[in-house]
Length: 78
Image (tube, rainbow, N blue to C red; front, side, top):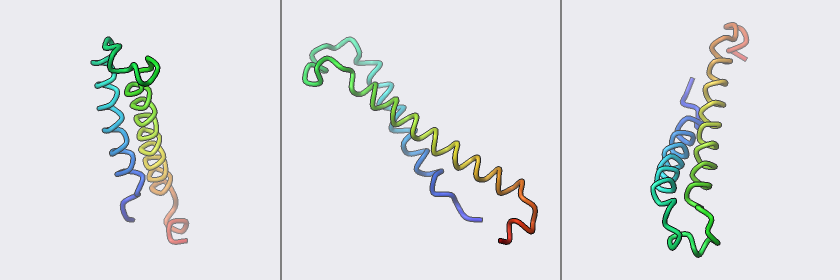
């Protein structure tokens, strides 16, 4: 049983998303910074999206591993 590719992808997206969320929260009061994006705190919203995607990948990897471990030995060989 090898490493599921969803683990490193999920970790990477979750870390980048969390960093963007923190940066977006810290800079939320600076209107000048978000003038080009029509006043939308784009760092916060994209950070939340990336964090959600990363957590989804980690959940899917965890679920696949749990499903594989709960399978009977005959099912694992196929």
